[in-house]
Length: 263
Ligand code: MLT
Image: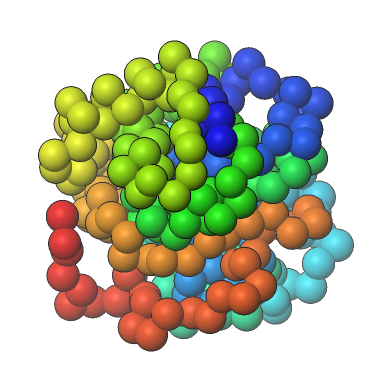
């Protein structure tokens, strides 16, 4: 199994990603939010690449069962029901809902991967479940880090470290013969350098600092909690759903009050 990796998704188009097995990683916060929303009973996530597409698609869907979620510069988009904080995607809000999802980098990377052979959404909160899926599939994978808040696609340390932790788990698991590229080796090295405290990493990385500045510091704690939302969001047709055989884990709502952190 060859594990390749890209540190931003900006230089790829849909055709280059066609027929690959892809893990889209946007730790802060799109991947975490999608994972939490589906674990909390959302029916499906419909990723879109632009606000215009979100408006167009939601016009043809029934308002009662459809929500619009997403951000620009980290904040809720005008006219949307939800922003991109995973804490907004609690069970009472999302159960049974289709969520049209538009974010600066994460949903764009998901949309670009729509012709993938398989596409799963990865973050720290469901890392072990993603790694298990990769081991079971035992095919080549591309870890597609979404990168950061702008149009040229910048490197995001938190996405690279998350990808590196996946590589480390795959190697340590010994369940598959893992071949690395220079990029996946670099991510592994970053995980070894920064993976001791994921919460500290998220507090000190550029986007984490920005989110704290605009009032989303509590998102960092949720996003840092490794393996707390053990579900697998995956592409099914044009939407993202939980893998078919998955049940919502008992007491899984990480947005509920009184929850303690393991990291
Ligand atoms: C993105 O897609 O760029 C993000 O998830 C930004 C954020 O809301 O933190």
